[in-house]
Amino acid sequence: MKKISRRKFMKIMGAASAAGVLAACGGSDSTAASSGSGAASGGTPTITFYPSAANVSSGTVGGYKGEFFASRGFNLEVWAYSDERTNAILASGDLPDVMFIPEDSLDVMIQGGMLLNLDDYMDKLPHLQAFEPAATALNYVRAYKSAGTEGVYGIPTSIGDNYNKYLYQDSTERNAVKLRWDVYEQIGAPAINSMDDLLDVMEQMLAAQPTEADGTKNYGTVLNSGSDTSYWACMVMWYRMQGYKEDQLSYLLEMDMVNGTVSSILSKDSMYYKGLQWYNEAYRRGLVDPDSISNDRATQKIKVDDGYAMIPSGYLPGWAPKYLPYYVPGTKVYYNATRPYGDSAYMIGINAKTQNLDACLAYLDMLCDPDAYLVITSGPDGEFWESDDQGNAFLTEEGLAWLTDGHSSFQDFELSTGEKIEYWNTPWIIWNGTLCSYGDGEGNKRCCYTTAWTEMNEISTDNELYHQWQDTVGYETWADWLAAENAFADTSKLDYISSFTSLPDDMMQLTVDAIRDKVTNASWQMVYAEDQASFDALWDKLLADCEGLGAQDIIDWRLADIENAIKIRDSLQA
Image (cartoon, rainbow, N blue to C red; front, side, top):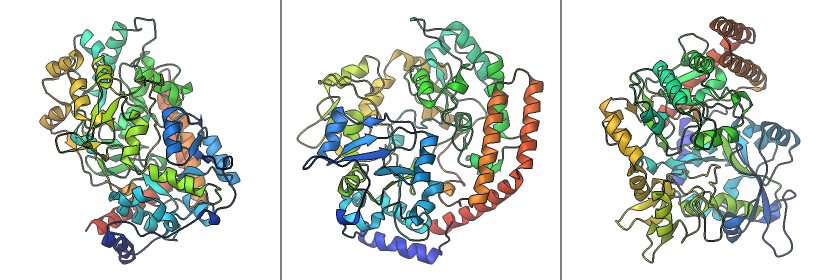
């Protein structure tokens, strides 16, 4: 990583803070050259967009989203995502107009002149300039994510505070054990005192309801291999259920966010090893979807979102209203709802050769507009929600009826045109908890995400299932339960350090990639092991393979790098 002195960094930071917004320079399309779909003469230009994951449908965006994009000056064509396509794009240099840039490719792309320096066009990004948290995030980019140029070639996503934390009853998002609560009540709601007890309960739940009424098969839990990118992704939920994070898994390290410690996964004392044992026990008891290793993210999402898993785990949490959280004694829950530096794992940038620069800038600026977020995710004004002459926004009668009929969000709500709302599940520059310009009629600003509106929360908790949850657990809210158990942490000694860690050089990255392949393959094999002896043999082989590839050198390098990252972070917060 390009090092920069604290004095130099603070000088860059001060330049923006003095004005309250980012400094801007003019720019024009005359500097852009060749790529892009273009448009008919006088028509709205079409720009191509490559997302950060397979979380949004490919093709030209139509419907109300397409109409809204056109009103902002562009049409959008989404390229289908895959790891193979990402590699092909980076190798060929044939970029879309706008793309999410993998952090480990950012420097090479900057040095190769592939990305536009957005500092030259800040005057065309008014919503970015007006978004106060962006000043810190962009100056962090200038200092640490610019290949030493001090320019903005990529913008982090999910910047700012997530005001959802003030509005959700379940305020820890995916960071919790969740149960298919109707089935849990059906088996008598037995106490769960450990993660091993969770397996027993999962087994009882699946035995009680092996299928839905229409014959759809249920599972104890569902995993997927399609999210295996830089590590074995199925460990994510196991970690999140217990106060850990997966940020450093690529380097064989796990982060205990509650206790602020980082340690190797290559130990039988590691949470990683315990997770593999837990998943293997679930598999041997017939509780894991047997097709898990063949599932991609979209397949797992359908099975979990529709409530066909008794306990969501793997990579995706359970957002369906059938799932409610459970506190397992001895575990901790960590959730920090502030991101001053955003998420730089994938940063969004513009092709330096685009032929549609103004359209690309309009798209980036839209991703900084919370009012636009409200429309794209929750539908046009007057359908699921509506605004009044005083600048307030409320759910419509149709929206309220939809929710009281048992739905938990705007998803699949049918507009007056017959179109159904589908979530635009690709990251925005603003976090999804950002406040928008609309009020709630009581002097407060609305969150740009309707799921966090107080009315939706009241409706979602005023139902038989939630009242059963309250009666069973003895608390009004999930937050109350965690507080009573002293089991919640919203800050950590390890907060934000991933923003200041280094990237390995090319040779080290080859080693990291080789180790990743070994660990990912071995992890799947251990989950599917037929007995303990086979599991143990696979673990021993994994340790030997990692040792042979120089894993300890990677671990030692990263531990030292994390210590340095903590010092940098602390120096900036002093």
